[in-house]
Each structure stands twice: as C-alpha cells, then as structure tokens.
Image (cartoon, rainbow, N blue to C red; front, side, top):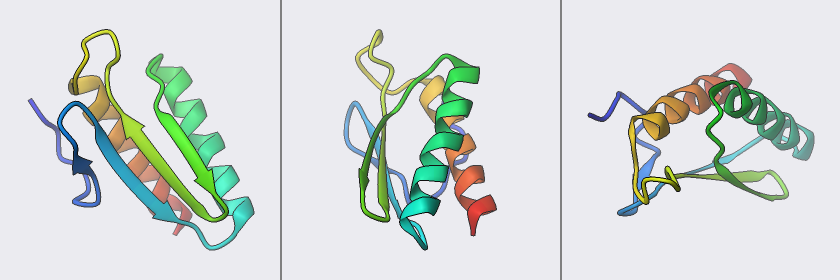
Length: 86
C-alpha cells in the first residue's frame, strides 16, 4: 500500500529518492535536522546527502530489503517539512 506522496519522489526499485534544493546552505542543514527529528520519532532513518543547498533523501526499509509503508509515511513527513520551509 503506497500513501500519497509528492511526485518529486522517484521509485528506484527497492528505494524512494527525492532531491530538493533549498534557498541557502543553512536552510538545507535545517531541513536535514527537521527530517532527523521526524525519523527519530518514527524510528525509521533515511539516507541523506547534502551537497551545498541540495539535499537528497533515499528511503528503504533495510530489514525488509525494499520499500514499505514506513518509507511512504516518512516520505509524507519529509514532503510536509519541505513545504513548510518554502
């Protein structure tokens, strides 16, 4: 079951991937921090890569070896955090 997530997410087989370019480097760092807090709350942690103002999120449930509902739920939370930053 996949939940409604932004069309910016790309399904890459066993992973969901989304990149976002923030207005400033500090905005990118703050977004990563907010996602980290959400991930800790869910006990479900994404891979995150920061390249200046661009942050890439990769979601997969490592214990299942594929995408699960937890990944879609975290993607929704990330979408909301990105929307709140804009």
